[in-house]
Image (tube, rainbow, N blue to C red):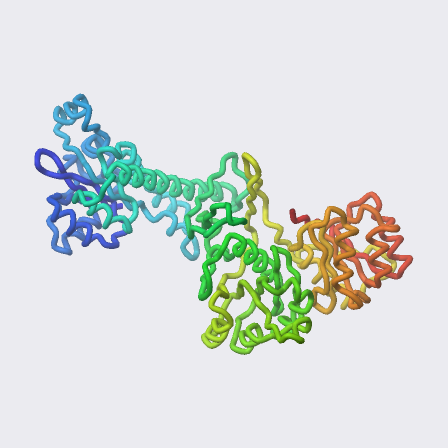
Length: 541
């Protein structure tokens, strides 16, 4: 880290900067010099200033002590911290400075060692390199200046340089509130920095795994203020998780918006649900979501066919929903999204309307065509979601933290419990339904066939009602289809299992675990239906 210091004492002004990030250094230095500040610096910052033609005094002349321990000790000295922490309104403090020949420091601008960038760089960093990039002097100066903000202006963001210069020129009103704002920003900056160091150390000590530490800090950075929250009377904002574990992890938070109205609170929730679901599939897939539930899912080599099938699964719910793809949106697909009229709306020739389209990539022409659908249509480009993430959810007074439910059919064993063994096609349908049901709110039932969701029942307090809804949506297509349940069936006879068998499904997939699992098996055997157990529950509350 390099330090830039300006003196203000007996007619000479002082301030101190640490500039690992040297953006706009020349602008800042020019403005400060014009205001009468003397530049004092060390290392790379001093060289940068000298190269730019500025007169620089080395920090060693202030401390009368050389840098030592390979630069680990530069500014941890009373001549620096005394000048920052001294209260100008206390005679005892000022007398102490005079006694020891220390001048006051009135501006501190610090950029910390690039620890975050170092440990998250491609290939990572060795433990030794990570440790060497932990800043010591920088956070100490930031905290000291922020504590004494009434007398010291502290700045940690190059974007604030214009405000700093305006404030020092006396052109801004309410200088005290500006100082407090900068002090808050400084403490928050150090807090986020320390949380990154803490997270990295914890993982390094646990073989790269997150596990669950006794204390947990999650650094969040404001991405946007939202018009309102879930409802218009609720204020809201959207934050990006800056945890090291989230780097290159994909997801909606880091998606690029190419077009459309600004994202709303509910838009983010729905887009996240759609993206989480579509990223589960290897084949070209389309997912349509309404109120965070997938109402249509289809996989096909021909993505246009997959799109049509996903829409037709429930075109009423799809209208006004979110459509997501796990493959590139080219011109042909974009035109289909823009022009397609579902069977239900053929009579009045109403084209499908969507709030959001999400995909990992768009061709130039595809994007151009899609933009022509609506000025309001939000077009997002998101990166595929990485496995092994954590999931956090707030409850009153606390947070629930867990591993993400990211198991795939390849991760588990599908165990046949009935006399009938499912055919290869039926097992493929069962696995597809099992993936879909994971993304449906509990109690959840999904009916699927030929890699296409035919119907789903979600969010019902009892499993029978969810099953009835799913079968109703599937209609006659339920014959020979697979049915998946997110949790076990507590009863079989005259209940959900028997109703499914009577409806004509060919295979049922469920986690099992009920004391009446044998009843479910016996019921399926009576009707000649296969039942497959996964031993994996998929509750989604």
